[in-house]
Image (cartoon, rainbow, N blue to C red; front, top):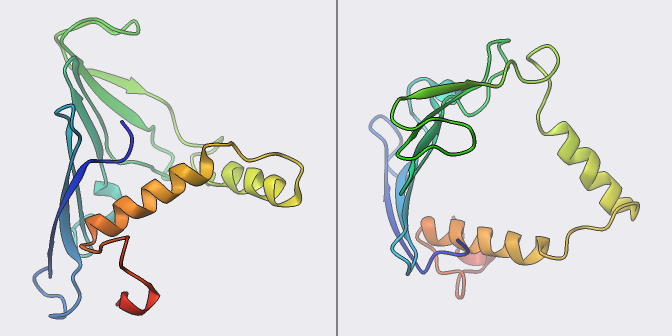
Length: 160
C-alpha cells in the first residue's frame, strides 16, 4: 500500500516501568483508500516473543500468525478465515495452515539467508534491488512517525 498518509502515535509508560521509559505504544496508520493498520508494542508484555502476532484483516477475510516465529521444534501455523474461497482455501470456516518447524530441526535462524544475501551485496557479488533504498527510507520515516517524531525535522540531537 506504500507509505501511510497519516500516522497517529499513542506512546505511554507501561505499569511498573521507569517513568521516562516510554515502552508501551500503539500507532494507527491510515491510507487514503480507506485502509488502516494498528501496530502495538510493549516492553513489558507477558509471554514475550511467544505472544508476538501478525494479524491482517481485509475485505475477503483475515490471517493470523502467532507466534511470529518459533524455535522450539513446534510447527509454525497460520490461521485463515475467508469470505470467499481463494488459493485453494475454502470460505467460511477457520483453517489452520501448518508450515512445520522452522529450519531443518526447528532451531535454524531465519535471518541467516538474509545476512548471506547482504554479504553478497556488500562484496558486489549481487546487486541490491532498485527499490530497496526507497523502501527502507519509507519504513524508517514511518517508524519515526509512529514514535512521535517528525522525520523532516528530527535529527540525531533530538533523539532520546
